[in-house]
Length: 102
Image (tube, rainbow, N blue to C red; front, side, top):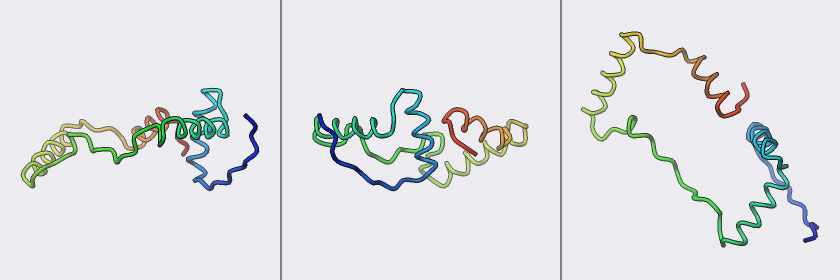
């Protein structure tokens, strides 16, 4: 199939960089990935994935003020007991896991 159309899109530079890194691991360019997406949209008659707001995990969801206070109390007890992880360590782990930049 001849490619004779050009798309010009604006994206966040960090999002583009992270996507390029992931696609490079898969052996794909952004252009190839966009072509694949457009083919899938044509084939399935819409987006080939669900678009929805992710739900918070149950450990964060609270249904009442009392439940919130209970979860906060548990958290405070964990802090007092020294069961904590430095924020820099957490951020480094997240960057490593998701290939994010500083």
